[in-house]
Length: 446
Image (cartoon, rainbow, N blue to C red; front, top):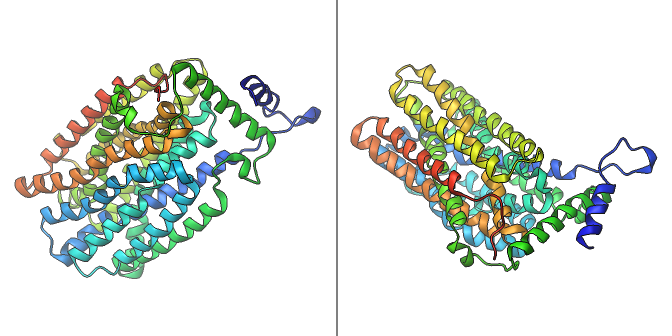
């Protein structure tokens, strides 16, 4: 179908009241992304469960801060190393197969961590969770490129990524509730792992690699999505993109590196708060396990609300005719300034409630950077969205395995969290410079 004919088909199938025989467009793509939101939420409940239970685990395993940092970083070692290979596999075999296998594998690894007898076996289980969870986010970026119209990819990206703060927030309550209900942190991990395996079956049942393969998608919705694909392909041809499946050619472009360093800085803050946040609240602010659970819910719940709102603002602003650069640089630049200011504030306030409020503000604006999950499809199109998403997430998760170790060393050496919080400030500055450097307007000519 030509670009002109595809655009005409999409215009003819815009949603209407259903009168005059015009077919109403289905909304399977939104239901699919709600499922992905739930999936990523479960992902982060499992990923962050160890942080919530850490005050108990640290005491049971008799671990000093340095060893705690090493344990918290274990997940990120394998998670980061698997990103680019998994991204390539997603582009080659499709996101449906990779996400399903990922769910079943990480569910089993999470359940296995409940049987850990000490530091070493827990460390190995966390390495396994990192390997198996690696495919989820790059696959989500690929599905955003395949399923979402270009006008909707900001919301698609933030719905996908909003599962991170939602899962982190709900995990604080759910894991503490499971521990209290079962009387065991081990049983809470086993239950969480079993739930994840069930999520894998739900993904296989509902997700498809092409909208036309889904029984629920009607002709109107398929044509609407394909019209956007045709526009993308025409714009890519103008930019000289050849549609080659590759990663290395992207290394010469500034926007590729800005994408990678932006996600690195973002995760330096987010993963730092995700891994060490509960222990910070326990040790620096004197919170008990129940208060940690609710505080974590408030802090990361604010991040969830902020991320969804950021996606809505970005798409509506773009729909009004503003350029991608204007929208993204303004929103993400502003969020970076607020994050830096909020983290500096946390270092100087002594009141625990004020610290929770400031951290909630930080997460609210930090999660706007979840819009980055629309960038792999912007820079690489549908062909390379998987491998570029993997490269971006690889960079971000370098911060994932470095940050917990660095914070552990800082806390162990100083007996304080002040310099750890300043480390987060430095990460936010890297993020801010990167989001203002990246060119969001055009696909790279690869």
